[in-house]
Length: 140
Image: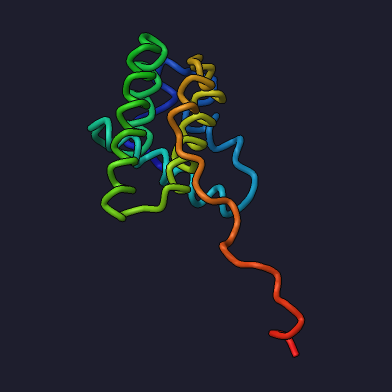
């Protein structure tokens, strides 16, 4: 991923950028495909402009300076996603997927907030299909 920012001249110097730290933790190909997109949905919700890397840098700086701001924005984001569920735009079980990507970014970049409190507001969604084992008469 190329960025309009020159990381060599940034405050990160020789250290990995926040985006690089996040991407480092992604192992499975499907996770590598989906997590950056899900993180960007949250960053767009925050009205952060620019490339993904630009958004990530601003988000990282704001979150480190003010973890209470991050907690409040996460609550607002969860409430917004719950409204989308009520409008049948997304499934209830989709919301935790956004949350996982945001949490991984924060964990990989040492942004500390109370995840347990935030997870209380997350819907659990359905984890299993609504079907049953076939009965013998239906199989024969």
